[in-house]
Length: 397
Image 1 (cartoon, rainbow, N blue to C red):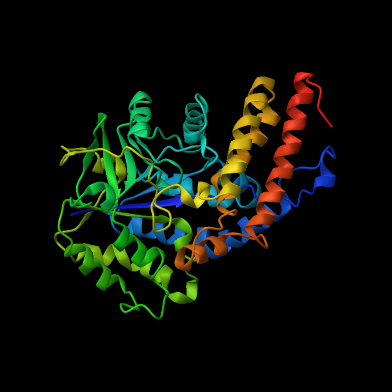
Image 2 (cartoon, one colour):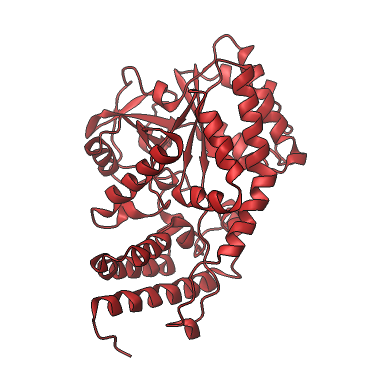
């Protein structure tokens, strides 16, 4: 059994408080100081200690491997707030046993915007990986693990050899997620599926004292992995699992350090990067006619577009984009792309309950989803004004 251990690094450019009275003021939409302060805090609690432990494991265990995806907005903030985090990332990539994945530069919903925006953002991200890490990714990871037959066709057109997707029963129809599949409409694209129960045991349940398996030790987890039937197991989660979502006092960093040694004691287990895991024949073609994701219980796009607020904001952003792209102004275009970042729509979530609702509230700093919507729409309205002024189009008062 090959363990495909994949972690995602992302921080959005969160919006500043942008009131209706701020329209035309020239104020930035993004609270740079606050974003960098948040980044520095997470770097101290999570990025530095977890990357140091990963590097130590790579040095101590030659068979240990993992894969990372790193958004452009993460790199931008790291450059300003904690450049040593980028140094740590470069160091682990230089080992040759850490694969990097491509995705949208802005962790955006560009895959729902008319072409060529998705291709442009993915190319921006590829260029960033070449510049920062000297890496040419073979595997594509779409925002929030979004996947569909159409996205597989896009990956094939962009000459990616693989994609990541959620191993969801609704599309597997009884087949296990522990095998390599290929995209039904694009058979050259191999699919690596997330084993969500085992991933969520660490990502969500690790520090839950009410969980029947608490506490989760590395030994116990390695035994679970060894007992899982199949050829490969996709452990996909946020990097912030290790020190941020689960604090250091939960033992999560010790778990991360101990896992390579416990896996080594299980003869049936080995590590593989995503680049290594896509090599080999697929079990079967897999068709996913609608877009699924790794978020919430429904595994669809409802976390970002599930209610009227979210849909209204996103449709407005698409319309503003038509004018923005006509301007050819790099500053205006960059601001628009930052507003396409999925997190802004995630903060407007109002339709869920139970565990889903709690996760959304954890990530949002707004008083309510309606507050998030109003703030976003004010910024978007101002961006529209700037674009129309650039184009010389009269603005109706």
